[in-house]
Length: 178
Image (cartoon, rainbow, N blue to C red; front, side, top):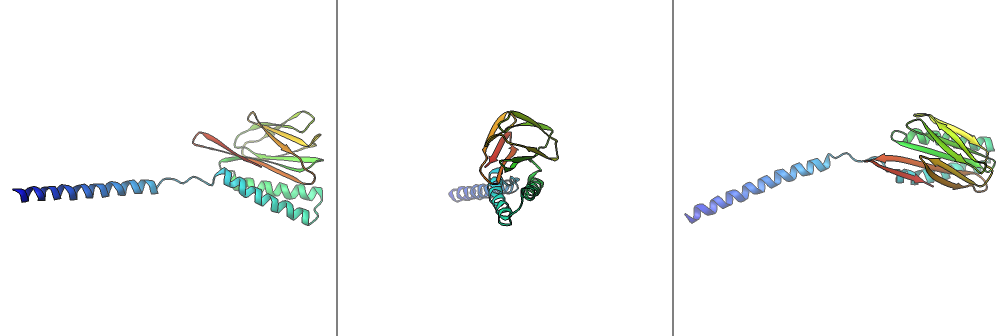
């Protein structure tokens, strides 16, 4: 009778191991098949800092005129927006102390405000399209107001390039800016 109990215990032990292995297989499979998030907005911000510096250096090294730099940075902003726009709003501010261009992409129609020292200017962003607005700054401080939040930028001598990227994920809003 003692031998029979030992065999019954071995059977239950082997059955428990098999059930545990099957459960571990299901857990591993569900963890493996979880959707991975896209590149984070912070990583894109770091990438954008590096790329924009290289583009500015290229224009400066080749002695681009003010109009050529505006076109260069406009093309860069547009290309980068096309690269990230699936689920992110993006805004760019570039130029020098005599003229600043604000380029933006928003998933929906939006009004943002810009204050360049001469009072607030309303800028209309058309949903799903890249929009460009030129302003003539009256001071070295530019404030963009997007969704009731102020983003302040200090114009330096020479060419400037600033950005703001937004991403919503899991009910949270993430922002990257330089």
